[in-house]
Image (tube, rainbow, N blue to C red; front, side):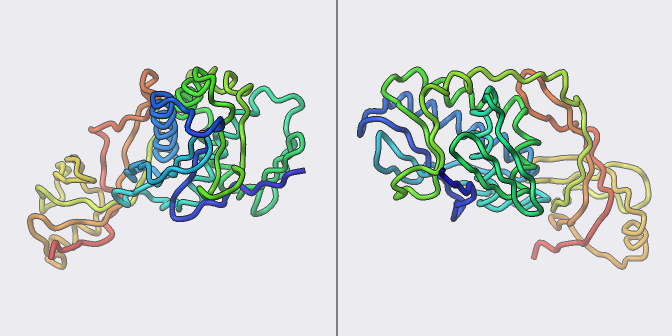
Length: 295
C-alpha cells in the first residue's frame, strides 16, 4: 500500500510528469497541456486567494518523456488569504487527483481529522492538510477549473505516446507522487459542471491598498477615484470615523498617497467564461485602516 502526502511542494513550485519513452512527447501536446494546467491553477487562485494576481512560469525540464517544473509568481499581494505555495499547489494537485475519482467504484473512504484528511482508494492512501481538502471541495466544481483540467487531459489523450501523467514535488523524484494512467484521461476530459447549481452573485470583502486619484474631503456620499492593482475604480467611503478625522485634520494626505482599506464589492458569475466578474458600480470602502504616504 502506497502512502502519499500531497503537500511536498517547496519554493512555490510543482513538477508535472509526462510518462512515455524519453523525449517522445509532441511539442504541441506539451504546449496545450501546459496551457490547460496553467488555466486550472489561475482559476484555483482566483477562488482561494482572490485579489492576488499570479503568473505561472515554466522554470525547468527533466527526465522521462518530459518533466516540467512550474513556479507560481505572485505579482501583488492583494488577497486576504495569502495562500502559501505548499497549500496552493496542494489544492491544485488534489483537484487533479479528485477528478480521477469521479466515477470510482467503490467510492474512496475519506476520514477527516482535526488537521488532516486521509483518503483511501484502492491500494493508495492519500494524506492532505484539512484546509487543502476543504479548499478542493470548494473549487472542484468551478467551470473554469474543470475546463482547464479538460483542456490538459484532452491534449494528453490525443497523443498516443503519452502513457501517463503525474505530479510531484521535485524534478529529481524517481517516481511522481501521484500517477494517472492513460485509461483515466477520458473521464477527466468529460467534465459536467451544472452551472445552474452555482450562485450567480456574491459579495466579497477584501483588505486592499488603493492609491488615491481623486478625493472628496467631506461626508458627501460621492465616489472617490482610486487605483487598485493597477486598475481604476470608483467607490464612496462609508467609514464615518475616518471622515470625521479628515474634518478635524487629524489625517493629512495628498495626491498619489494610498489608503489601506477594507473594500466590499459584488461579483456576477459569467457562465460563458466560467469566471466571476466584478460589478464596477458596487465598490464601497467600508473601513479605512490607515493612510500611507507615497514617500
